[in-house]
Amino acid sequence: MKVIIVGAGAAGIMAANILAKKGASVTILEAGNRIGGRIHTFVPDGFVNTVEAGAEFIHGNLPLTLKQLKRAKLPYAEASMTMHRFDGTSITRNFGKSKAWESFYEKLAQLQTDCTLDAFLEAHFRGAKYRLLHREVREMAQGLDLADPSEVSLLSLKAEWLSEETQYRPITGYGPLLEFLYDEATRGDCTVAFGQKATTVRWKSGSASVVTETQSYQADAVILTASLGILKQGEIAFEPEIPELPACFDKIGFGQVIKLALEFDRPFWEQQIPDLAFLFAENGLTFWTQADRHTPVLTGWLGNDDVAVYKGFDDNKIIALCMDELSKIFPEARRYFRTAAVFRYTEDTFFRGGYSWPKPDSKKAVKTINKGFGNTVWFAGEAFDPTFESATVEAALESGKFVAAKVFRALRGKSMRS
Image (cartoon, rainbow, N blue to C red; front, top):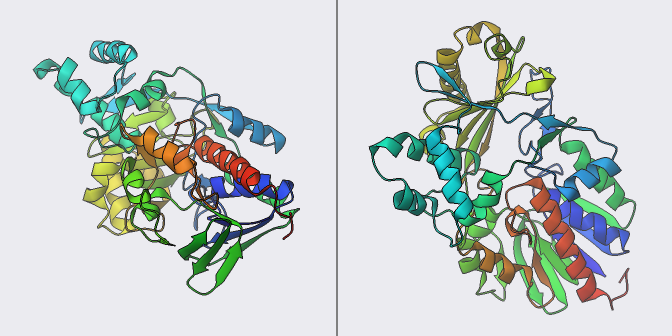
């Protein structure tokens, strides 16, 4: 049983881990020079502290993520979700807890029939008195979910937005978890080839050939875990074509984001706001802290529509603009500033975006994709989570686990080392 996995992110590594343990021969083709994909835990040049360039949070009591962290003996800690807002003159505590927000959440809890966020706001919250609510709700959808309010499925966001589950962070970051799963996989017949960007999948039922820019690889099945952004742009061709794919990919949103890590000499913001976790600033910026860990690192976040304003700037310009906004809130910010790094997840970068968001027809599309094609071509990744909880590491792990099981069942009759 030979399986090729395209992509060494969370979904690909999880699938490889499971299949290798079952005796399959697994080859991972990774276009980059490391494992992890949109997980990247490292110390950037000039930094003292480790940062998460990609995924960072555990969004609730997520069983598979927490189970794997415990297996790997990797600690995790509660992450504060206290939200503040800066309106240009002052900081307001408990963003999202006004009477208008309470009304919004009440109506959202009653939602049974799907609609877009914009349609929901227009139906239930018209008039000048809700102007700020419209702005804040749309900011949250665009900033944190990377979603287009005119297209996002509100029913799909409902559980996330109403959730009161505790949020967590892996204390060592997500990188060591991926290393643990990868190390387990390579104890079996699992290898990774770096610098191998897949360009074409030639397939028929029971056989697949994956062509990269330099080589060709043969297997009984292929699991593609490239980001939805890459798949949407048609960067991997299929021979023969799979006609359902473009429409399915189009029914799932994929957002853009620019993430910054700002390192300081000390966490100066704690003097003014000891419990600061998230801070919604002006001009599309959101900041968050390491909260209870008291690390002198702030994360800056520019999501979706706001990316268009910034992505043409070089890193130094983005850092300068970010510091301008931060200095309006904390005048002493420049005094303690040490260094910064910019991580781009836009349509013109390696992953072609950040992560997925649901449209009203996304569930149907995911169900179609998860059936696989000819028991030979399969897809996995956060966008294709069978539980429809996309955009998280948990979603990627669940998808990798789900598809690995389907591939194993489909190929069970084949010799393990054939």
